[in-house]
Length: 343
Image (cartoon, rainbow, N blue to C red; front, side, top):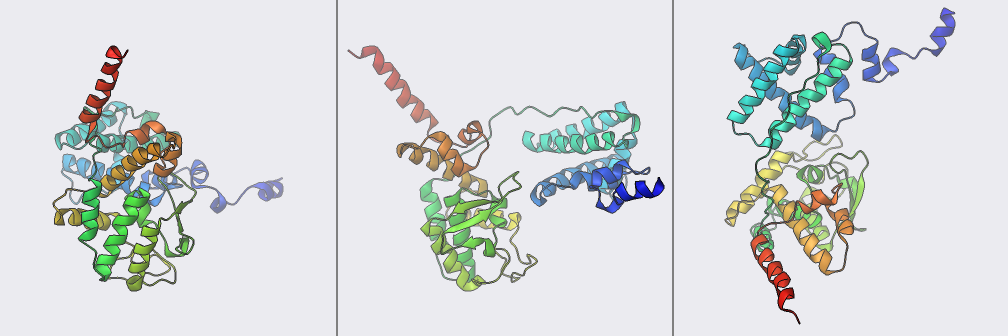
């Protein structure tokens, strides 16, 4: 019987992390985090890790612990609390974020991160007393600003980096690619040379929250900009498409530009021409132009959504630039009023 069971029982190391944990008698925050991280993208995990580090710093400051607790140690302390004290800790954490004037979206993401990891911990018997973390998020009192730069401002940014140096050609290609494709900064940073076919005019991207890559067409202006940059970067091999000047690309991804670097590049170009701009603002403007010009060309909103790669129309429409909202409302009001006097 024992031999028969041995034949059908899978080896522990072949089991997924969550199943391996379910068979363990000793569990802690470290093992829970390993299972919780499984299957999440690197970009998603960077945001989650930032939230958990903030909670660890908050708890360390409240307990006057130096050096600050690690994420694992902070979660271990949270999981050892009973329901009342555990909720009290997280409510205090929420209050501290409110006092720091963090955006509601940032606060809610941090709370959602704690709820998610504590849910797995409770499922696997780590939370003392098996309580649920039920601290709600905060309500956003005003709609976020979705105004992007004017198209003319984007042109002036490109004029400001139109030289032939490595920095100029790279930064020009970055702005052109972000704007023309309406990319998120993480999508741009994830582009790879071996997955970009300039002769065909296409590249593969991995969109937000998606496991499968998506083939994106490249307009001629983007292909031309990347070819100019490749004079300095090199047009063969593998690795990231956009690299830092200090390190050359390798097969392991060395030299890849990170989101912070691209954010700085775009912000500094905006400052040169007197415009406050960030990467996502370029996406706002791109989607606004796609909606306006797409509808003028007779395309339906669902077809335009393929460009923005949003899951719902409602989300895409929230990206429309609101600069001219008052003028548009006045124009439409006059059209409606005109029906009262029409013969």
